[in-house]
Length: 573
Image (cartoon, rainbow, N blue to C red; front, side, top):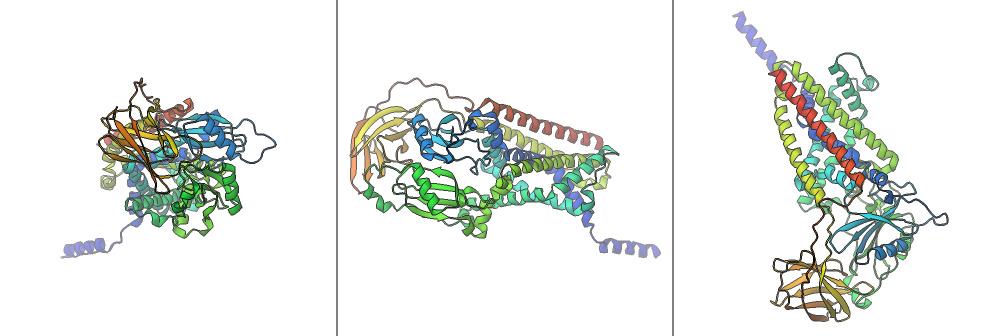
């Protein structure tokens, strides 16, 4: 009888016993580290290098630095920069000029070159370094560099939308790991300065992990929360609701007024646009000038309006390209809470809100976070060897998760290689297949190489003469009657179509006044020697050494992690 009573009491105790939340948090913290630690490490370490990636580019590319600065010049000469860029790239289009210290290149130490993006006929966008005071072109490379690699790898692992989803999802696990670790370990204030370097290896690594985690906790929370906001952005984009996260669209050019400016009006000088923008927004430190590629497109100016926690685009101005009239102005101080958060997430996540000082701080804290992840993985692996069998339930999936992670990272490695190759510079310029005079305009018809009209060729119309072509639309009509509308910059619209060489085709241009002009011409395909495209991007040699070093670091981490998993599995068996 007493035995039955004792058994009932035992059951009652087990039922009424409260769950051990500290133990649950402890095991959850370890589960995240063991099963997701490797992918967290890769994402965090790549983000760490992304904070100083532009500075690395400046160190390895001499053209990114200005050797001499005229003592009598203190202002940037935007017109001189534009003039020299157009001289160096006569068939190119200057898309954007970034002054030293722009948010995409946050460091400005006084001797930094401006950076221009120039679209060339081959379809490539060149990055051109320019002396911001004299306009001298210092050098140019392809679009790929250290900054582009780390920003793309950290954002999506060169794996498209799937990579973005995986990277942003890791933010939730990083936040959970930080919270569970902080909640479990009591007396965190006392442990800030407690570091025991004696004792067992496991004890030393455990103390290092705790100290690194506690010191880096505020930074980890910042990175995790901003990373979660990126996930929200991606989700809204996929739902087609991204506009809810940003400010209301700014006013654009009134296209109904463009007919009064004639068929090929001239633009103002870049310096004049900057002057007018400065007058409308005196406190704005202008960092970006984007020249119109069409009369219907505004001249875009942005910069820093006094708030270091927002991107440059939070303070921006739209100007009329033909008159310089201020169409609209946006100030970061006028943004709502949600649009402000959207504009602030990048400077906070990458640490450039305070210039080079906060970038270096973010880099150090990023290394600390990456070390904390690695050390935590090691501590939990060692613990799993000596843990009792009933305590190893959460650890059994580690080999499987490691295999999945390694498989995915291997595939990401292949996609990274292909992604880098995609930045290789085309070597074949478009070939001319005809010339036309259409009403008040003259244009040259080009076909991108390889030009295979039977399979569908990319044809562009290069409008000649000074000024910006001012028309409503351009169309190509083939001999078979197929009509293809050309889109893109007004000076070089393009389309893709099939046609038969040697047959007559029509270029049809509709002016702003509604009048239709057309010209008949014969598309002829000249014989050209097609050069083999480059395998790798045109970039400074130092970029490859940086990428090789990072790749070896990632590979070494995977090998070490795999070795630890194998060792634990063997010892447990």
